[in-house]
Amino acid sequence: MATERIEIPLIIGGKEIRTGKTGQSVMPFKHGHVLAEYHMASPEHVQQAIAAALKARKEWAAWPWEDRAAVILKAAELLATTWKATVNSATMLGQAKTAFQSEIDAACELIDFWRFNAQYAQEIYSEQPANGPGVWNQLEYRALEGFIYAVSPFNFTAIGGNLSSAPALMGNTVVWKPASSAMLSAYYVMRIFEAAGMPPGVINFVPGSAGPITDTVLASPDLAGIHFTGSTEVFQSMWKAVGENIANYKTYPRLVGETGGKDFIIAHPSAGPQAVAVAIIRGGFEYSGQKCSAASRVYIPQSLWSEVRDRTIGMMKQIKMGDPRDFRNFLSAVIDRKAFDRISGYLEHAKGTAKVLQGGGCDASEGYYVEPTLIQTDDPAYRLLCEEIFGPVVTAYVYPDAKWHETMEILDKTSPYALTGAVFATERSAVREATSALRNAAGNFYINDKPTGAVVGQQPFGGARASGTNDKAGSRSNLNRWVSTRTIKETFVSATDHSYPFQGAE
Ligand code: NAD
Image 1 (spheres, helix red, strand yellow):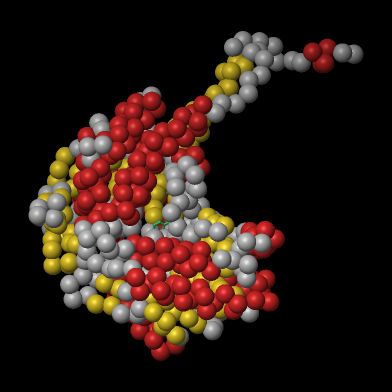
Image 2: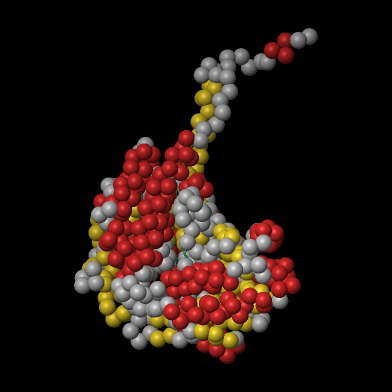
């Protein structure tokens, strides 16, 4: 794949469109290497995509759900077999994931999303109400009236495949805007939908500049929902725009967004230092910390700190960073120049305001490389403990052992996010205390495990507070957002007399 340079068109109503205005997909670890030119949509193309979605909806929404599920299940089967190497390679080259990180995302997670969603859809459709004498009650799980706007992030190929297909499975049609920096893998996912028999217009693939595309989509009276994963700021901007337009829509658009995080690890004095150090390495630095769930702030008791620190630094010195095609590498470059500038800005800030214990270097000459970095601060309100950095940077706050409870209170209030978090402790009472004190600090809470790596069907994923609407991707609750239930009551023998028997009494 690295020897090719492909052209990626828009795909609207099943037709390829080349607009002539193009962007480039490059290897983040070797940014001079262009993998693809992708065509970019103008507002007119977005209008065409909306029209194609509304046209396709008539038939698609009326299909028996089993037929829609068959398309999704076939996509899963193709991805598990003939398409697996293609989508994995695109994710390695285009998003700088190691072979392992690609496999768990682009292959495993997306296959799981598709297969589990078919199961969850079946459960939803089969849930029917009780019947009274002579009465048959039914719930009809209708698709939403209008179209769904799916906007996906760069960091998981699986998320793009799920944001677009979950509403489609429930009978909706979709305008999908993939992230520019994950275009190669998104394009191949779109090709899988086609190969699986997805009818033209059900999912419309619309790459391009996010701002103008979104403005056109949100101005449409037919917008029925947004399925978003990405930063909190962008989701809030879309929510605001929907609020401003609310009187123009034919229905209240469903807003489903999984957004940023400031994910934590807190160790109790009874925790095992090696387990904590490994969780910092894997949770903080895999995929260069560019997982929404990546550990980026850690709270370690004084009594464990020197051991946790030394073990973490020891492992950091061992891990290698480089081209993902070299399987010895543990991580590669960050996604693009914007990410590189943002993360290196945080590192600059840290150099003057905290202790950089390990790492801290960055170099964008060939690829956007940022070294895994461990920082220590004495200020529990330190900027790097509050803001999402989205890079391989972990900041540690060391607390006095006696202040376990106070530290959990501080942790709970330090950042606006509540996505993932982990507690390490061997004393059960400490596990109990953390589970309770941090109830609202994370939508996915881990006990003695790193806060990343949620598996579809096992740990449904999503966070609250500024981290999203917590509809849990790849779950029944998510699919429920894409249907609007109609209740149907049928009386077999209709009443023929308006009066009631009690009225006959004297
Ligand atoms: P991003 O917000 O920059 O981009 C996400 C998508 O929104 C992209 O398709 C982008 O083109 C689009 N976008 C950008 N500006 C827009 C605008 N003004 N209007 C509409 N759309 C716009 O995020 P990213 O860098 O791709 O991904 C990283 C972010 O995603 C992090 O904040 C991370 O925490 C979050 N994330 C969250 C989850 C979760 O499940 N909670 C999962 C993955 C990523």
